[in-house]
Length: 202
Image 1 (cartoon, rainbow, N blue to C red):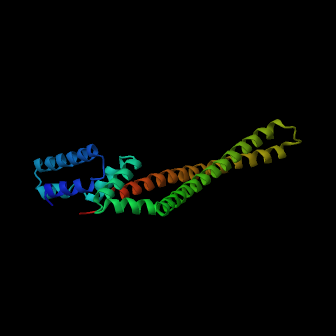
Image 2 (image 1 turned 60 degrees about the vertical axis):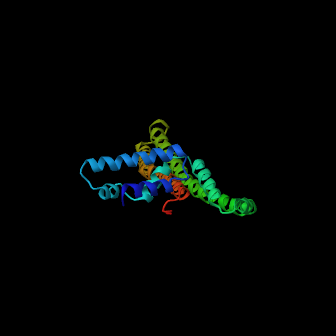
């Protein structure tokens, strides 16, 4: 693919972006191609080395707010409609359906995220309960008036075991929290790429 073909295709894919953002991205990749050519690559090699247009579009979309991408996609759809009056009528008539579907998809996404965070909160509560109760048992073993050394050692041992068990759950808690954060980030990235028209060609 030549530089012109590449930039033309990129420009088409970024048509739903705010104009200044689209121009900034196009200028960046135009300069990247020029730099590679100056380093001795052919024009086709320089373009191929930039990666796929799908990935470039998705990466550019990831830097924009979701509301901006949705607005751009709606405007583009309206502008490309052959009969704008019909488009507006269908959009208005179909709004109860697509709005309900969008809300349902949003609710499902929120439910999954809430479930993950609920698991993380539950694990955190277990960790806290084990550590606090275990530490209290260790302190109590040597401060409360127990008869003999054996009960004190047993209670202290159980307390230490509880603290150790609680600390074992800390990596699990960190893993679940990290997974929830990654899932949220990935979901937004995929959604933005889809709205921006990843994979859409002329």
